[in-house]
Length: 186
Image 1 (tube, rainbow, N blue to C red):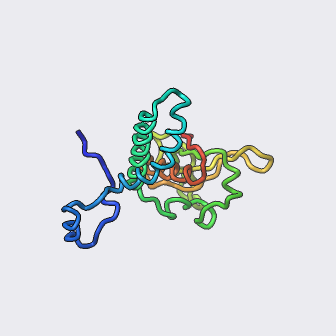
Image 2: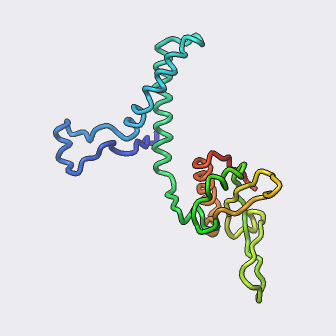
Image 3: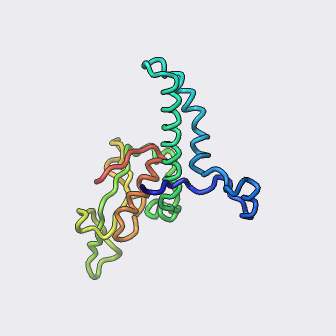
């Protein structure tokens, strides 16, 4: 059986000798602390609604505990996910900063797509084009515009690192959570 990731101690102590004051245990795990934080709202909802669907009070409590730990596990997993910096997020956007709320509101989803350099010798600058994954040198994250009289298509928000589609997806999913937008493959 795989060891469960619990996020380590919730309240780590600087001096390990302090743990002897508590029976040699470092205290509750971060997972336990997260579960405790969500338990009150989850439990009140689930216990309150337990009688509506013929679930016993005890079943409602057990379900609340399981859901609390499911949420805690997701929180621990999210913390151990890839570190994403501002430099990762907006390297194609004007000024390298986040789009404004008004600009974000123009998007109906985010998409990830492969890109390759099609520059020719003697070209002034670089020329990139969308391509299939098999031909991609890197993957970009695009904001897809809601069709209006002034906007159509999509705009590149950021380029992922060369050859790392997974990283581009992680960046897109991060932005999708921030902006409450779905992420699709182009």
